[in-house]
Each structure stands twice: as structure tokens, then as C-alpha cells.
Image (tube, rainbow, N blue to C red):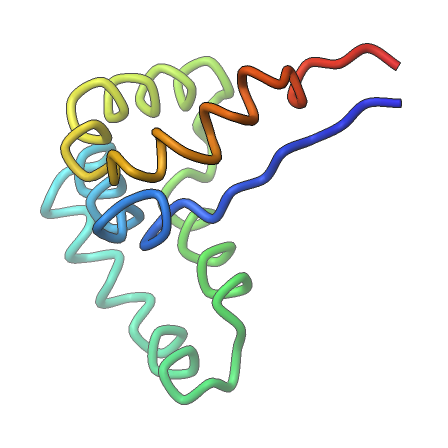
Length: 111
């Protein structure tokens, strides 16, 4: 049996929300601004709680990353992670549960 450890990232492991910052990093400021204007009706629906957070993020990610291949997406996520994630990670989050999970080998047990 394989086990999987899942963690809430933005606001729990990190001190900040990284989605918009990642989009800006990946596509640039102009495309981000233009996209946010086009997506503003969806963002209003989200703020009014008429669509879920999950659905809003799905629409946003689909808009900004449609057509990008997997290798290219992995490359930009790795670049973003190396340049930005360490700055917003809560040290206590890494020091406690994540290190315990990694040392317990929960993420990589063979069934």
C-alpha cells in the first residue's frame, strides 16, 4: 500500500500566497495584468462565494498555462521554487511535520 502525505501550502507552510506571484514570474507582468482583467468576472464570482477556490484556481491556471508542455512547466516551477519559495517558507513548518514525514519515509513506502 502506498501512502501519500499532503500539505496545505499557501498560508500554512508559507507566510504568503504564491499563486499570483508564480503566475507573474512565469508569464510576466503585462500578461498577468491582461489575464486578470479578462478573468475579473470569475474573480468576482469567487469573491461572492459563487464559485469555489478550487474552481477559480483551475480556471486561472488553465488560462495562463494552456498549451505549455509538461517539461516547460516543470522548468518554470523549479526556477520559481529556487528563487522565491525559501523566502516565504515558515521555518517551523519545515522543522516539524514535513521533516517528520520525510524521515518517516511516508512519501516513499513500497506496498
